Length: 480
Image: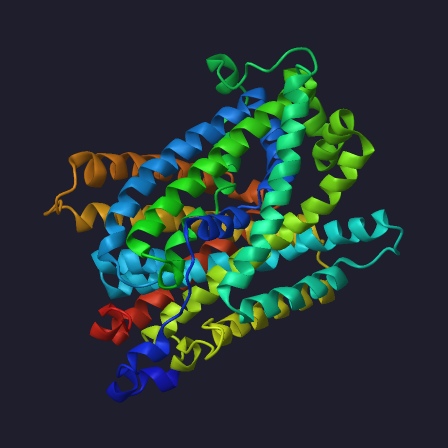
């Protein structure tokens, strides 16, 4: 860091073309990348049982509808600002454009911490899931970290290569996991559920029963990563059109998939029995439902695809985190050497390896200390990401309102004032719910909850200080 901050000469622009990523991603490829980061099958198998058990029971599917509406409000302003942000920095570029370099770089550090935490943490779920797949095919019982290490090597290789290779891999994995869940949904619906299809998703009394706040909290967690469409700007075809279309498509696909599938799962057992089973056997809730409607073959397929879903999530977050590092290095916030793409692949290969190094240390420490991969390693890191994610959305919503405050630039009042404000209100309410229940999210430890908040505040503060020191350089556009 010191070499880039020591003298004004260190802030000079390098050759423009040398620090630019290359690609030809269309809307489908970016949507695959973003939806894979949301890990649809992972949410269905992990988050949905938690929402049913601890949230608002059979009304939980409706919280996905509510979360989707809030995030669509956010997306209206987010996409309106897109043409005025000519760099691939996602959140921090949007915030910097409206609120200045110090705030923008502070947000960038929060984003980087959040995404790396998610990538590392999901290895804690992938390890045991992979061990189950090995045992399913008659193999030995393997430690979780060995499976995680193997997946780490593959992720590092794909992250080093051209983004289009990753998008093809994610496309195949995502299609497979969505296909099996759609088959399960159809199996339940066509059989009429356990004793009729659930009405909880449209019943006001059911929706507000139990803990609606906890239900909304789990629903919001399920969308982490959808906003990463903008980070692929330099690798997208006609980004001014591609990024907004991909954002809306990803949001709607995720929202409809979650709402319909969670409703089908509830219908598969009946309102009361679904909550009971999610409470007593949440870890096997999806597998139990699958076996009931698709038999043992369907259960085996779900077991394998749950593992590949987690891998797809890791790969997607790895690509996003690497591009955050690349974007920060472009404006010399991080060492400039990280901002030169691979001469043949056009990928942020050095930034990708840097992220891999951080993740490798995290996995190694978790294994050496003996952390429980799911209950501790994943939960702690996911808690960090959840808070960071909503804070980033809030900061971006404020940036939209500030940017268009004095000049709507031809946009309607709805596009740049009303919708972003409604999204901001919804996100602020979500943040309050998350902070109120953060200790529960991280295993009941209030100390750990405060540590997570301190890390995020420290990341923002450190970034803001760096942004202030760089001054005008951090506020300029990235090399074009």
